[in-house]
Length: 200
Image 1 (cartoon, helix red, strand yellow):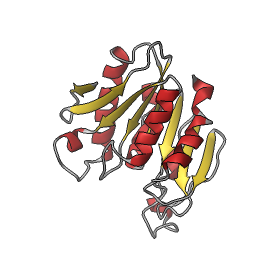
Image 2 (tube, rainbow, N blue to C red):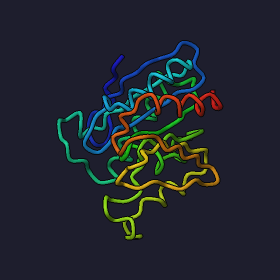
Image 3 (cartoon, one colour):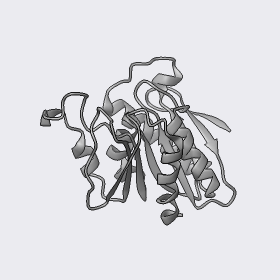
Image 4 (cartoon, rainbow, N blue to C red):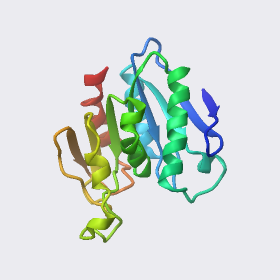
């Protein structure tokens, strides 16, 4: 099922996979230049479905409009919050939320975790820093990850040029073969299968 949802930035689109009687929903956003067909997002959706978890893969308004260049963080966050609010009031109203996404989508989920009431956050290929800028602390996105107070799973490619975040108090980091694209679906599925059931 596909829903078009209004946001302050224009229509967003949610690709829904509803599991009957599900008490948990996994809502994921895409990366900056990609879409919801990314291999790691599809792998996460498959595992969640097999575990009886409802899934929504969310396309940000700029992608629905056919643009590849993403807007400012504030606009991404506002659109995401509008989508989550409508999903929680409708199709996913009876389910607790695990929010997440890949790359830029993971950043959005981290920044908005408290506002959405997420019980956990899934980060696929979290971009710790721009490629080649590991020593530039001003460019680090780690504070966004550190600010999340609920359990976080980060699945990161061993050779990701965007860096590899450290483990943290509430954070589990699983490194899998590959780079930022996380095309190793089996490794992503295995990581998620061992983590998601604790919230179901």
